[in-house]
Amino acid sequence: MKTLNLHVDYIKFKPLKKALNKVEPLSEQEKKERLVKDALVVLVAIEKTDAPNEALISKFIDSIKDIAKQLNVKRVVLYPYAHLSSNLSSPEIAMKILINSEKELLKEGFEITRAPFGYYKEFELKVKGHPLSELSREIGIEEGEGKEKQVGRKETSDLTEEQRKRLLKEISKSKLDTSRLKENDHRILGQQMDLWSFNDVAPGMVFWHNNGLIIVNELFKFWREMHRKAGYEEISTPLIMDKKLWQISGHWEKYKENIFLTNYEKREFAVKPMNCPGGMLVYKSRPKTYRDLPLRVGELGLVHRQELSGVLAGLFRVIKIIQDDAHIFCADRKQVEQETEELIDLIKIFYKTFNLEFDHVELSTRPEKRIGSDDLWDMAEDILEGVLKKKKTKYKLNKGEGAFYGPKIDFHVKDSQGRTWQLSTIQLDFAMPERFDLNYIDKNNEKKRPIMLHRVIYGSIERFMGILLESTNGRLPIWLAPIQVRILSFTDRNIKYTKKIVKKIKEELPEIRIDEDFASSTMSSKVKKAEIMRIPYIVTVGDKEEKTKKLAIRSKGDRKLKNMTADKFIEKIRKEIKNRN
Image (cartoon, rainbow, N blue to C red; front, side):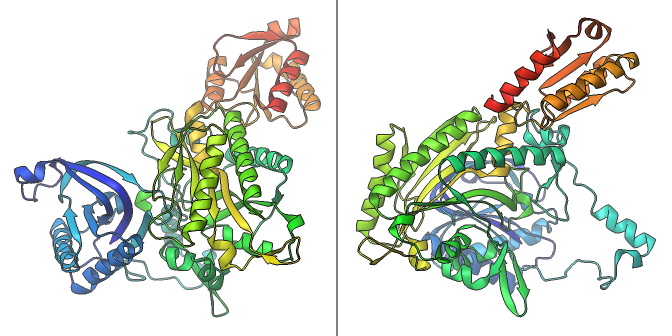
């Protein structure tokens, strides 16, 4: 059984038509649209390995009770959702499990709504923004069930030819069904531009190809330049750390189901789901005084979070995530206000550079379950709201949706399909400095607790790139483009002169990403190949260009050719790359 548990402000759903012939017809009442507010929605897929026995249902109920207790909710929506698995059980078994689960949950005092089984349904929901609002879980899957017997600890060379072929077939590259995707969907663009691939040997983890990694590294380069100017230090923390660290931070209790675990010398380790705890240890490694604050520490950190395969979606929802985390340690309210103002300015610079606009900004305030005194929360909310007003930033008030450790400001971007994504965030944290016993020595030589800001700007590098690709239809600005210039020879007799042009451009611009196409094919086919790759500048050299010493330049999908000398062209792209136009 696979479940995706969503804490929602509301869910609306309505049956449309039968998906399975065997299911009973619905009554007129059951056909109507249902609306449930402030609930735990449990999207569930019943699998072939699931049996409608007491043990499985008990595990399922315990999972729901555990999550509901943490969220403090009593309304539960059981929503059959086949897309979470490709190994579905029979409808009869699935129905039996759902009906019996509903009965048991009613006995536990929950208000239950069960969406119709075996029907196509339209639904709309709004998921809350706190850390526990989306949790995926697997229930009742026995280790090793349905798997081939192990071949032992032999190297691949000891496999039979038949075994080798079977394994190779199993690890073949995942195929993308493009039939329902829009032309500018980042998953299609990623294939056309040869940016990345996915493979079932590592679900939800990106295999970056050379072209895609160029974009990632350019995003990193820009990030590092901007953060050096803003006075940040950069750190890197281990990918795998002892369970103790995650118990101290609170992630063990809240996120254990979504953490990858491993063992070393009889000690339990976790693959980090977040960068923050490692940053706390860096702070604690040396004594701090008021002269060290504010201390700005950034990390382009790699994290992993378990997700069900059914909810993975290209770069928008992945298991391996690169986050541009930073933590700012402040001495007092004045520093927090100043740092928050500067963060908003920095975030705006980033998004202006990429020509992305925020759909809206949210200020999320104290949730019902929180830590810290009301006086502390009054001050924290007053700080963030005061800064937003001072910066004349329009915002929506999102009452009760702050993190359990403090309020936050979230920046939402709308993608090309009208969906909104939270990317940048600024969070005021009381918990981490307390949990990790962070301190500094003030002017009076007394120990004080620092105030801490968490923040990301890109958020997830993967999601940011997906949104950027779709908003530009893959036509990235020249400084980001994997291939910036492609030179085409019109005929074979022009190749010698074309090579001279390529050499000249490389000598003048050593870091230019330039290639050439001297294939004996038609000019139209060469141009089409370059267009599919979304190369910003396609330069053609034929007899005319060789004679006039000028280049025929096609820029960013424009069908009109412009003629200019090699020197002028070099100067043009030099400026565009330098200014990140």
